[in-house]
Length: 111
Image (cartoon, rainbow, N blue to C red; front, side, top):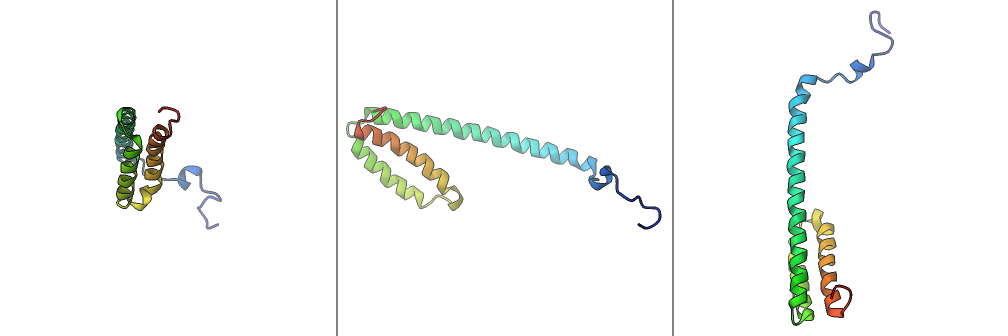
């Protein structure tokens, strides 16, 4: 070791970040996180409302098999426009909705 330097740097020096600069960054990140959480709540509420609407539509539709066929055509058309990083999420949600329709068509649970 050169003269005048400690053999080991103290822990505080190993992670010496300018504490003043972290305040605004942390605040900005917190605000973004809160906005994201609020957006996720809105999306969750919208999806719940759409599921309830579909359940009501299924329950009152005279020909659920026709409704299912129409839904599947729409599924395929929309799937082409879904961004690649969202395909798995889209597929999962559409399969859930399709399952509601299939139950109605086949007289299964919830029909």
